[in-house]
Length: 285
Image (cartoon, rainbow, N blue to C red; front, side, top):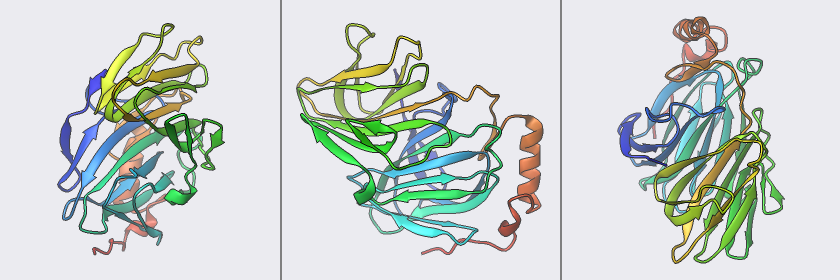
């Protein structure tokens, strides 16, 4: 298991990096998972992306809200329990900044796209908390961001097949969540403690801010979790590996160095998807 230590990112923001750090650079198809706590004047001012998707999930306990703006005129505010699934595709320039004076607490996941999808048109899927499927069974609550859990299915379309579920388990409860065979999957614990695995898996006790990567062996088709005296809150994220080369330069993720050079040139010269960056600047609250 891997402990995520708080570090600085963006403009004065503090994050705990799960996937995407030096110990776990990427985990096909996932490029990054950050747990963020951000308050004014910190944030993530104007910056570009190409070649992947960003998934921002505001945790249900977040008092802060995040304002999003991009160079195509799209803008919005997300708060506690809300979800934004952004496909950057061939190019987006946007900002993500606090929208009120409270601390925003959430997760941002980066999902890679296959070569055939990397230059698609940018798009958004946004779900307010009231539209994110939530179910509670025998002391286990699942918020289904993508995929399915406990019999409910998220409406989110995933270009790269992905399951993403936020589980909250009361003390002395248990869970078995199916995972498609040979998918890569990991757990990030937000708070509390639980035992992950059973007699057929290597069981590990894990607590807050730790990441556990799960076996992708064909016989491993799910995750068993049980709690003892403590409750636990964690996300389980699983995806179908793309199996292509990953070349990353900051906010650009492509398959070759030549494509990265082209992405940098396109952004600097405002072309091939970045034309609208020429005159655009986000409006600060």
